[in-house]
Amino acid sequence: MTLAPEIVKQLTDQKAAGLPQVWEAPVAVIRDLTQGRVAFAGVPEPILSVVNRFIPGPTADLPIRIYRPNEDQNAPAMVFFHGGGWVLNFLDIYDAALHRLANQSGSVIISVNYQKAPEHPFPTPFDDCYSTLLWVKSHAKELGIDPNRVGVGGDSAGGNLAAAVAVKARDENVELSYQLLVYPCVDRDFSTKSYIECATDYGLTTRAMEWFWDQYLQGDQHNENPYAAPMRAKSLTGVAPSIVITAQYDPLVSDSENYVEKLKSDGAEVIYKEFPGMIHGFFANVAATPSSHLALDFAAQEIVVKTKR
Image 1 (tube, rainbow, N blue to C red):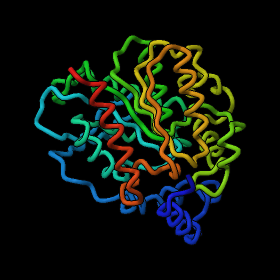
Image 2 (image 1 turned 90 degrees about the vertical axis):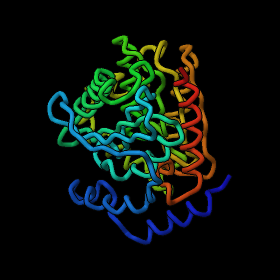
Image 3 (image 1 turned 120 degrees about the vertical axis):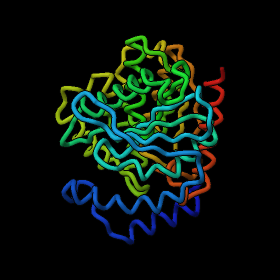
């Protein structure tokens, strides 16, 4: 399928805006420019409650946002890690998507604003995310959730973090019901098919991903660390069941395809769905394309299956 018409318009508008690429301006300027993404992401649908609070992290208190869709005090839950190359974005951008995902899945969603690179490179964002999972499970009664029905999820860099958290959870015998990986970047290998074929012209570029990885890892010493690049795990046997969602025109498609093959070869449970005509970022852009709703609802359906009592 060719690019969806609404995506063609989105890319045309973005090009016309003439905004700098991530490597062309100071990080503070690029972060300021992301403020406009809140309106672009859509208006959140009604939900029972949204609560903001802080929790203790390994090196700093971490802001979390708790989306509760119903009164169930033994609800399933998901700990969500947002995308943005480990450098950009914040919780508000994901409000519309997570309202819908919570409502459709019946899960309480706890989204964490982990510390960002380059000020806080690996392993700080990863450690923040893993510690948030442990905090959620240990505070299940207070949160009104079932500690035995907790999954993790994220998109892009957040998908990397979710996959890495799932690997460490496996390593430390922490029970997870599933991992939702939305176009995750799981390896620092820019020679893959999609990094070459979708290098430019589709929003996210291969050069931008190279820059994001540079900010996150700051050298080559962590390239083989599975908590930084989950594709490098010696084995994925025993990791939580995976729900993997991708976009057709995305430099990261090959990352997901390769990870799915590794999951399958290691005997892990995985469901994979690619959305045609879409580009990176569509999942959370509720206002931009109806495919966002389709992807959110597909994820929700799979989460319901994974968290049945």
